[in-house]
Image (cartoon, rainbow, N blue to C red; front, side):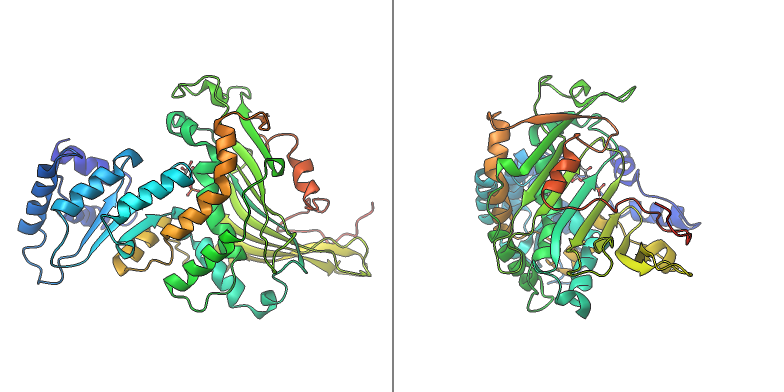
Length: 448
Ligand code: BG6
């Protein structure tokens, strides 16, 4: 690349919204430099080091010459690049931080091997493993909702919660990313990382403080209480053509045209501890579905000896995206002369509630955390091990096309495989009151 091409590439997606943004961008570009080199040659890193010393660091005082290395790279070169940096471009007069993006391996063994190689080069406190879901506003809000509200603390357990669903829906297929995706599949792509991170924030015990290590200790602890996933607790699927929308196997970047890689999965995880035994945590994720949505839906048990026989179950929903919201499905007397019970909600939709709302992009927030040296929203090495342990046997069965593995089909743009509703019902989810008008309701009594 030429310097100009580089500048264009790295600033291409920056949105210019205000009048002076163009001037700021021009100024920002003067701070950027491009240094080309081979991943596996020491000289490349030496010239990078020389460049940094002679330019960026020449005006800094000793002790402030800190370096953050962000590896936006294919996983196959993580270790050689980390080695090159460690040997030739490691700051000796300031701190070093290295940021790594997923995939961190493909299973427990490969992840452990990668962690071991990286650990020989950088200390754990210098490593920031990004899971960008941890930078999302509503994911960061989960601890606050749970631990800053007294009315949740006593009902947050198996006595009151019937089931928990964590759902990730995307309305588009792999569309040109099939080459990458086929090697990983939906479970490695978004479940072992993003959805499991959400699960640990929902299920963990209260940390002793908001300190990064205290939080990560609790996450590891709860993950260790989850047995490996049983194939019988899974529903897997792959999307097929629907009208002009192509099926997964038609993706031109796919080399294996008979691929059995799942593009949809519903998996049930069980947490064997005092708080959660018997409560299914249903993780659902799919590409080419009917909507774009990520949410956590906690369904409570029926009210015992209920006076109002048809009252729906309470649900607490945390909508991560789009339109960030926390809402609680709630039973209320239908206003007016009627005594009917109606299901409504206590609704905190951010867009309606907060004026001047500006939610930073997940990466904005996480990059700032790296600069501030805050590890709370990054994945620790033992956390990664604990996460891979839960998924690895299932993933191996899928990779080896084990006879127990069945891949259902579903049409592009549908809700997923036909068996899905029956699957979640089997684990206790009561969908009978799922259809109600939201957010505006009529007060006319129901006639049926
Ligand atoms: C990435 C996955 O980690 O997360 C993608 O590799 C997925 O397949 C993406 O589309 C979803 O992120 P977001 O922020 O758009 O929900």
